Image 1 (cartoon, rainbow, N blue to C red):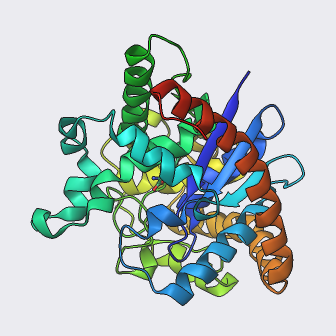
Image 2: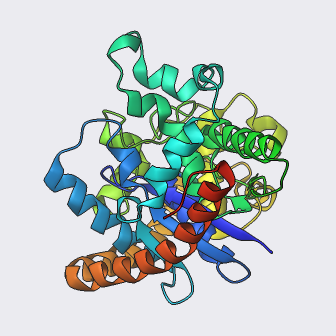
Length: 332
Ligand code: TRP
């Protein structure tokens, strides 16, 4: 049996990278698997958050999940901080995590920068919390982007250490759930950087809530190169911007990259960008409309999260109890 767990941080604008790289793929997973999709607010607070914004961003991600087609009748949707097992398991698993493993994490190194000593403990132990998210549900598969693979690898190592320590197979080793093309959407200003909500320039990303005009403008202004579009995949090698725009087109259109390249071969960027803008708007606009409708009904969103929390609690508290028993913690 497959159980899928994944999460998105409620930190500001959701963009095309979040949608194409994560949420859109999750929607199709629901057909065949038991899915748990979390809004990881505890991860968000590893960097400073405005309390009001954190709360509204949590509802915004909930609305985006629903608007994109995540079905709360089938799938568990909840915010991480509402289920206590995540934090409690983080402590337990931190006792199975050598510091040396955490020292290797590239995301921590990037985020902490030169001021390592001033970085908070939560930023450092972030991957242990992520392992707990996954292992609290004994999830078997985790859809993640390239940037989270190292963290998932760590979750496997922690699970394996626990299993070995107690000579059992309590935790399944979670595997990455890989998707086809264009899971990695890059910045519109620089094809070598990931599309990100923390990029200073709003022109680097397309937000799910952007208006038609803004989407048009951002795509028009997107960085390109002086050549026309290639006729083969291999010709994209040193053309990160062309690769990115074609990748976005292929993901939005649900068509293989090869096919899109054939279709667009020889076109100039100006005409390709027109098609890309049209396609983007036709896919994103209905989602942003629905999202805004959901956001008008915050009580409904909270009700969905509450139902999700109860289901998540049910599964994770049982697992947590077993873990505590295995460790030898007295249950009273
Ligand atoms: N760290 C992930 C990110 O920033 C989000 C996340 C938290 C996650 N817990 C998770 C993803 C568990 C997959 C599984 O993208």
